[in-house]
Image 1 (cartoon, rainbow, N blue to C red):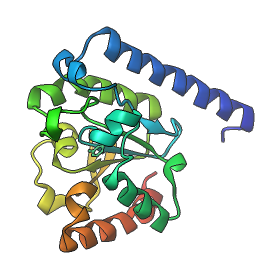
Image 2: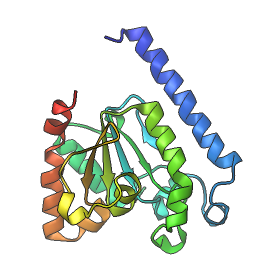
Image 3: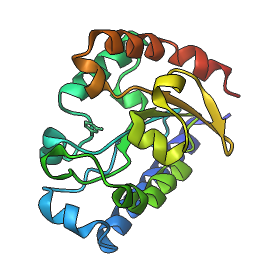
Length: 198
Ligand code: URA
């Protein structure tokens, strides 16, 4: 059991470690070509002490401007789904596999995902979430290789000691009625999945 003051110190030290990872991305000039075309690095948002970490693909236009992941239309839909399960953005941590906006919102390249992977792994190492939720196939492929999202969405997977839940990307589901309902149904199962993780 973590007592009050201990918990505050723990959150603080996690934030300091996350700030260091962000500084490392900048000082090591990761994906310099992407960085040059982007407004800023979009590192992550939410609670460093969260039980759930959501991982998207890459920042879009709004995220690039604000420096915060999932603040556009997909983010609004995500916030609505969080509300459905009695959570909000302060209860979770959210980031992307690629942390600069790809030009014209193109798909991230394999080498870009590869370059950012050690930093994503470091973020997870600091936060130590119970559940990692991948949004869309890009983040799923980076962390849970060899799976087909159409076959495994909504099914928790344990891999190298971490529990993952692959979900469809909210941007893909936003305007596709069937996929939208599937994503909502999968999302609603999150509290029960979390409860089962020891
Ligand atoms: N889509 C993503 O994958 N990430 C964001 O931050 C916003 C939209």
